[in-house]
Length: 364
Length: 198
Image (cartoon, rainbow over the protein chains, first blue to last red):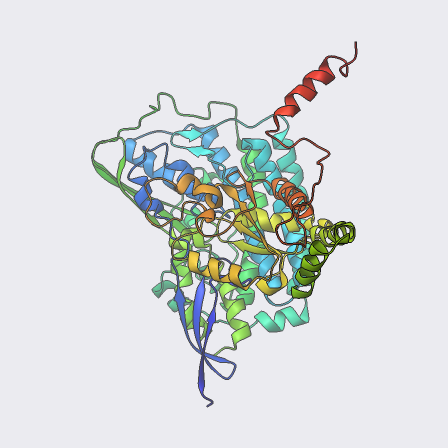
């Protein structure tokens, strides 16, 4: 036992994946206690939503989880549709599934790559980012934006696919699994990367459930919980897909689950492209000023980080009375003090990276 | 950089020194402008485009702008993303740690003016220029990586016009008209009229 040392990490630190500050108490190199300080990106989006009409809130939801904007769009729009009783055309539902699975690939690439970079395998980041750029290009062809799409709207999606887009998506889905197999080989097959990630930050399944973890963090621990299957929404019941599960619940399993989910997403997209039929992409007679009856609605989807929910309260005016976002990144980030205790300082970075927090969504 | 500053001061005051001063300026500005290492102060969405700019497709490094996480290694701070009142002291402190000469690029609407978070919120600084001297503003929410590259070129022009002698400005002629240059419209019209010749 040496004298305890308090080290401050962040809020601007290349390995904190955003503006996270961690006040770490160290015993030599061993982490004894971590205090995560959040709120450096608190922009008051939930409060802002109370002063916007229901349509005007959609661009704000883009900025929540900026690595996976489509999810926040969709979760919010589902809550609005439930509140106002809007039925979404089938083609729009398929398009939502396709863009959200593409978004899952883009988001997971932004997690698997840095997971490698955290343990010193920077090459993997280059490869995964090249894949992400391809998805971003597809989104740019679809709606003109690279990052903040504003594509999913209450009642459907903003526009139909451009000519040739479906072929581009199919071509990407054919090439993506082999690129992932390559990353799997030289990142997760690398002895140094394996030793840095295996057995680090082990999360027991019962702890994952007790702490409200969801998404790849819970599935890495072997908790078979995926809203796409267990609370099936949209057209997911018609699609056939597997849910990758980890067994040990360490950083290695969490990162690997993400890699396999990105491959599984390609299967979902290909099936959705086979099943999609021409038709309208926006529900008829959705008013510009949506004015639901007084009431409340909650809806959740399986985002890239886990169960992403939006709770809306209406008081009968064209603006929401209250919007609350159930952020998976926030719930997963709460695990850091528990997981990091007893590991070395260099492992703290790996553990934080494996939880994949996005601070736009944590702080809102 | 104290030596360089003294040199500039001495050359400026000595008779005939300005001839040498122009050469020293040219070398200094050339070397400074061609290796603007960046401090990526990415906080929110724009940070994704900041990362994208340094990766394979856009490849920022070929312009000599290498992102460094340590402020003491860097020349230009790229403020990419929303700055909240809680974050502002950290940004200020990092800026203070950068060695002179230093520049600031405000990337994205949030850093320029608060952007989408200008109204109705209580926690967002309405533009990073409230506490930092900004040299180049890039609009967009978020801007494309190409826009960030253009900002580096714009900043390079600004670096070119600086002199090592205090209070002096180098007279540099820009080859291309800057956007917003009223003469640009005339030139385009002259080209349409057949190059100004009849």
